[in-house]
Image 1 (cartoon, one colour):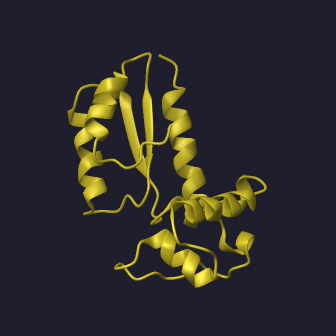
Image 2 (cartoon, rainbow, N blue to C red):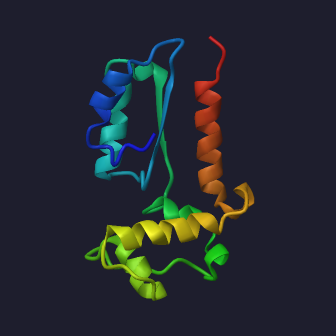
Length: 140
């Protein structure tokens, strides 16, 4: 389920109420040391249900980058200055429409539609997803 960010992760975990037979796995974009996201993720094990929750991340600014760039005709994803919202900057660099959220959603559909199977995704993402699957499916 899409969370829309991790700012409220502690309350989301609490509402889910993980336990020995109800584990929770969370995949976080751009989970890098020292980031706001990493501080939030590090607090989860100390909260209610934390021992039954696994938060993992990938190094990408956005999940878009987990798609191998060759799938959309690129040798690498464009570098976007921090002052520009990443998805809008990528669309601008690629010459794709980027006026509003509708354009961004269409860009994501285009990128997602280029993925044929898991081999079109970067291994750093695949490994993290496998880790989550292993965690939530562990026998009690």
